[in-house]
Image (tube, rainbow, N blue to C red; front, top):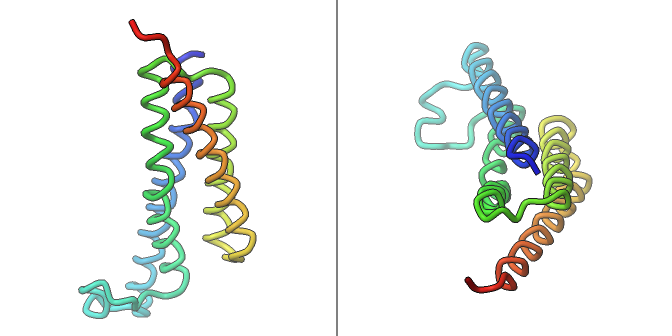
Length: 142
């Protein structure tokens, strides 16, 4: 596998994270501009943002939870030369579930569907980790 093929899903996950960050900034700025929120109302992290800004904030925070394990695994798999076609396919499935979950989170926020996307992604990432761990632990010693 080429480095580009291995890292492309990671890059898409990063683009998703930045996209949500920009959306969050837009929604918060709009809340300030419309005077729905004043800086004094949120200075100590009080939950006084409009619903759409809160959704974006929660979705942005989600990008620093489970995806962190994806980032670490991708880097480890690349460095240890354990990333193959199965790894890349599973990485794309994981990232697709993150895109779907974020889309759901930022629109209708229907928790059962969002939970399904999260669950599928979590299971795929767990399997990726199990495969990686088994491969590393069964490598012949030099």
